[in-house]
Image (cartoon, rainbow, N blue to C red; front, side, top):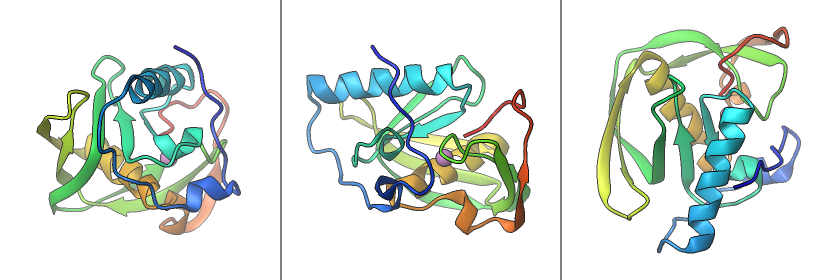
Length: 160
Ligand code: NI
C-alpha cells in the first residue's frame, strides 16, 4: 500500500469523465487499497479515483473512521429530501462551501468482487456519496457552492 498524491483544483484530471471498471485486476485492487490509505492519512471522509489521477469510476467513503465503503461504477438510484451545509474536498485544501444536497440517497455499485450491492445513506453519508460521485463526472463541489468559499483552519476535520 502507498499514499498517493492528491490532485488539487486546477488540475485538468479533476474535470474529466471517468471510465467504468470492466474487470477487477490486481492493479485496481492496489489502487483501492492506496485510495483508502490516502483518504485516512488525509483525514478525509471520501476520495474518488480521479483525485489520485486515475480516471476510473471508483470511490471510497468512510464517514465514521471505521466503516469503509468501496463503490465501483456507482450510480444514485433514489434520492429524497434536502440538506444544506458546509462541504469540503481534499482537492480544495483549506476551503469549505455551503452546498445543498439530498438528505437521503440510495446508490447501486459493485464491490471489489464485482458483485452489485446497495448503499443507503442519510445526512453526511448521503452528502459524501453525492460529492464523490460528482468527481467521477469531473465536477467539484465548488461549482455548486452557494456564496463564496470560506477559509477553514488547518485542524478542522472531515474534509471530503
Ligand atoms: Ni472531493
